[in-house]
Image: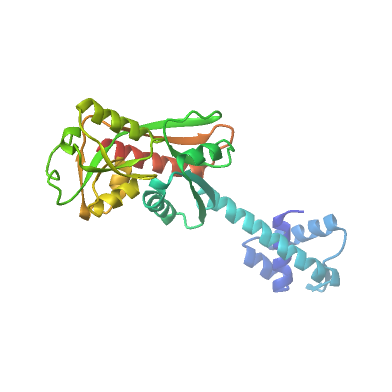
Length: 297
């Protein structure tokens, strides 16, 4: 029994005649007759009583029809899903990312990605980079973006390198400088990330080497918090270019900082989990955006 036989059966029962069913299906009438006869032999009972050129459905035909309709609809749905998967409009992508990229950049990319793929679903999980490193170990994700350095087994990792910039209030005396140095910020109220963050130690070392006083006014978890602090004229901060690209720049001035404060991101995929075409497409879009920001930094 196949879907072609069931479609013929449905057409004959619906139209009441082999000829009209053949016209509906775009087939020759003998083909429809042969197909119905084959179906009856396979299922072991008669579907139509034939008398003087007319067809009369048997009671068994009506009982069988509902099951046939359900099978046709099911196959049609499977075919539709296959077509949607083929054109990347069906499926799910799970993403792990750190908060700094989750609040604006990632939703923008997701909206862009779904514009031509309205049938897909995205799952976005945002945690601190330390927490993400534990989640990555589960392999239960398609793409992860975390702050580097990272060393995780059973993963494929691509690293992106950036240089941080100095964020100042727009009206700050140093806002028009082409480059900011630790000497320029000697004693200026400063927002830094907590000591666990890689940039914290680089900033302290830069100020120490320059003999400048790092006046820490705020320690916080995220660069976005540091930017908000600067926006409220609380002080200045050294922030990553990813966050800098996302902030509303009306109240901020972003200036290159010397010496370089390095910042790294790691784009990760699980090595022990097959990657779908859909997740590969999204990872490619994310990678392109990260490279654009790297070139801009």
